Length: 340
Image (cartoon, rainbow, N blue to C red):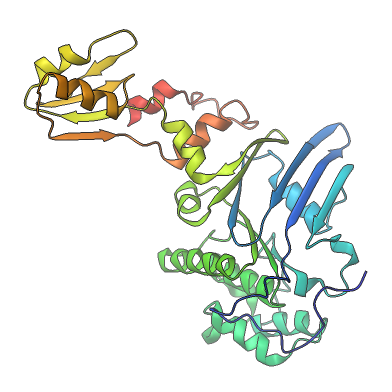
């Protein structure tokens, strides 16, 4: 099958440059399974990663994330099912670096080579010029150490080199496993901004991470897996909103005794930890406001306690954790409320 993009050294990833809307691709996973002996690592999963959106891939250790990513780029073959990237199978691309840029293991490098020579060796397999090598080195912030041996790089520097490798061919699809691992705060902000920029240009961006706070700020869509199966395939907003249903509402009022009486009812639980403050469970903020208005009770504050992505993730995957320590209890709604 011919490559979708020409093998041309002039291909360049320039922030702000938009991809031709007729030249877009996606990752399509259809009923794939993967078995290693008696171990079923991936169990009949299906999902689509669309261009123009940062899609996060979440799941506990052993959930099948790394196996799925390896199958997407042809490092493992599925036992069943079909995977298409940019409309075809990865193995059929004549110039894969121009189609898919992947970082699954940042330290998969020749430790005796410099960062520059590592990227140059990759570039020469696709006819990519030295100017592009220098460009991605500058893009990831490694210009000052480009001629140093990569084996002496810190974890964060190694991550930057892995990201440079993924972006070298100006790919339509970018797949990154734990891209923020080892990066300092400046680096985390940089990779977050870069990934959003790539998506805004119409590229397909697919990344995994265990950093829930960072995923909440970077991704728009999530695919969550557990024990080899898809648990959720929806937006970050939807995942958090579902977890926030029935969450505590924080209320401040100078009329706490009267407000407590007005809100009392079946299924309603009210706690008061501070003067003029109530924590209300079982009523929405809208209903609390209505009941207070009926009694002409003043409210200083009425704030639903929105769940974090971490809260939502823990609730979704609580029964799907395969490798669990014995000293940490299973996370329940009650435990999360007590910790809030």
